[in-house]
Image (tube, rainbow, N blue to C red; front, side):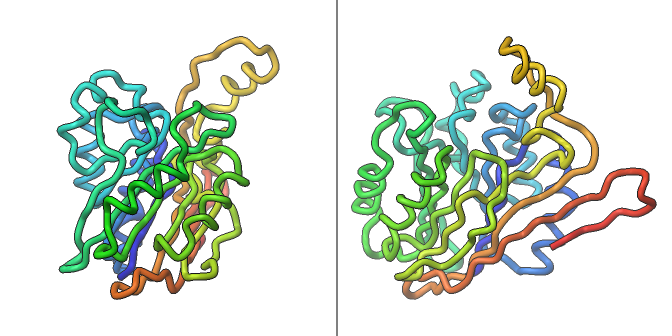
Length: 270
């Protein structure tokens, strides 16, 4: 089985990158399942019904998220009706939505789990204990298990990966929007990368216009961030997973980049 996981999709530029490259990636890698983190897909903050349907039409099968999934109040109210989107499972009991789902690739069941870290973020339920509880619910009959760990601290991400190695197929970090170069298969065949990265505006501060972010950094006065424009990029990973055992056999990092105007050409880098 081959799984394509796409890093945090940010606003219209991120969706344009998907529209531009996802069909190419499908042709190149023939993934059986496409997962994307979409917590920033609508205007840079949150998700809407229209954007959810757009992402489905572009070929995304399962959508994970994080702390920004709550930013569009109208979506939160209807979250239970959107079957292909997840919010972190370790939010308190009673919040809308679901923290994991079971899908199928052919006859093979696949569990996709969404968790959120606690270091430098909101103090949610323990992601380690939540993972233990979910794996008991999912059961031994489901061998392929993909975890999106939406967290700030690299140490927390690596700790969860080592904690779950041998029990899940992959632990894929999201949230920081900066792709790390540490993709590897851990002992006991769990694929891991600290952060998959971002899909959005290339020349930006993690997807947002530089000026607004810079003003906030310098003056410490709240600013409304705007999604940046211009050339786009797509970050992701491709996982090869043994269907029988759930073991990750290979993880490959992807970085596609659209060059800016003025250099006379456009280039795509793998």
